[in-house]
Image (cartoon, rainbow, N blue to C red):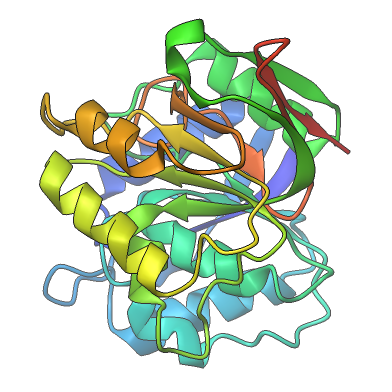
Length: 281
């Protein structure tokens, strides 16, 4: 069994969720450890900002584990950004999505830490599929993988290759104007969001545009924008129609059962002629 550290950097978690995370991770070969304080509750959150930051810093330094997984997302990770030791010599693999996006995008600044936008393991509503686990393992082991694109999911045609960056749309926007603002220049951007209407998503995309986050990019991969409304795809097609880089939509990224893992800052290829996108290590 490989050793992993389990954390709760956002919403509070229960013993039931921790047991579920342990069970799900055991299925793919991981034995987990965690701090006794992981079940602390401070309002909506998994303990105070100080507790959650201490947990991450502890996990990054832990000598027995090589991997860090999150119980769940939620809200609140932004509270602890200025308390995380970004200069640690840790060589961990850090995995999560949703609210964890904001942590992935600051920890990637430490070149020794590998940050993977992938599943959390203690959320009851997110049944972890076989393909989710398979691609997660490929990403962790640095094995290339390729995803097929449907013709109707191509918003702008093209071929491109670049490092990939991104995550939850609303979380990326939260970093604007802070020292942790995401840098998208020269990158392929992937975006996902859950439970926002099409109009809300459109406003966030416009905020990204006005902030210059679509300037000098190489491509865009969009998730399924789950639990939104029928207008969402109309807004997406209209917003991206004049982009001069490849744009694909409706991919299994984020709040979906398949939740394809994307390793930040690794090479990504989009080829709409072949109807594929791929991660190349």
